[in-house]
Length: 419
Picture 1 (cartoon, rainbow, N blue to C red):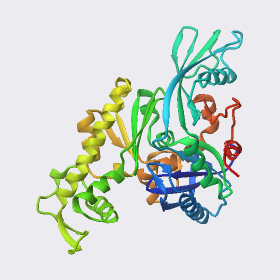
Picture 2 (cartoon, rainbow, N blue to C red):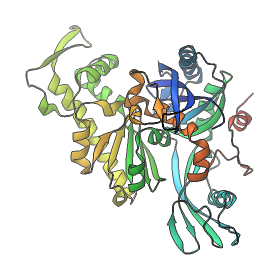
Picture 3 (spheres, helix red, strand yellow):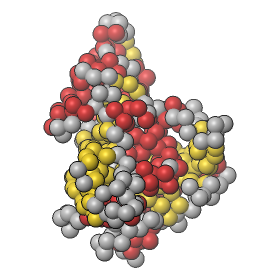
Picture 4 (spheres, rainbow, N blue to C red):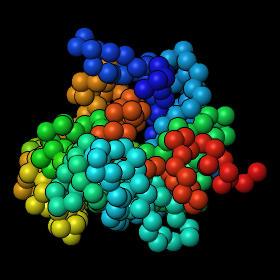
């Protein structure tokens, strides 16, 4: 990492977060990032992670950027931008490259194999975001995690390809570029969140991460330090809030406050006679409700989410590859009882992952230590480890149609946007 200052922008369905960090070395001499400042603003103009109103999103991003600059005392000139939403699709592909048998596998050999893997048919309205190595094969040696230097004549990669619709990518990008800020890289948000909340041991053994966001739940399955499967589920914390709003016939904002203040995913732990006041629609603006009833509404949606995650893991055919279990993160993971509920349904180890637990993240304010900010912190880590990842976690990013690899995506994105 040659730059000292890095910035991250996470554009979520319910909130937008911009972080500014500086690259440091910790007491052991390891590379780390210190957060200098952050800006958080409620999202506007997004639905399920997709931009629906460009001016609204642009304004909201600008507010988060301005606050982050004020807190950090630094000007943001470029950023790592998270991308998610129900337009994201994934597939797997294989690529092959010959090897000079005298010297073993080189970084160029690995890039050529990845180039071959990306040569797959995709719809004209879609664009490749990442091509990520899952594992490698050199001649008859299989399931290699790091092939550099291995002697042989033929290198093969099994790769995971992430695509998004061009319009969704462009709409998100122009909301950032409008502020005169370049985009260093678009990063799939589950990848970023995984950087912040997963341990090296979990990645190696095999683990599922579920980022319970506002509009969607992002799933990612890691094994052997590779990304094996990703998926976006159209359910999130906002659906829980909406269920409460409908059940109580209350405004959405009231339901959100009730969820955060009184919600529990194990209603049996709530006293039957515990009551809470709420503002509702109708001629009687305030009523009391059973806290257990509110929690039962939340539990039903959480159980549905857990069952959906369980079915998608099974459908992926990789369920046997995750002995480290499930790591929950994102705002909705903070509801009391979440770990017990997901453990009961998925029948695997479950824990909550927070960015504050990562040894390379320093200086997070109390607010930013929450699992809700795992993606933003992970984007800083993604930038921090860029050089090391180029060797140990190779991939191709944002490759335009002429096949030329771009290290920086700002220019290419600008070329796709209207004048």
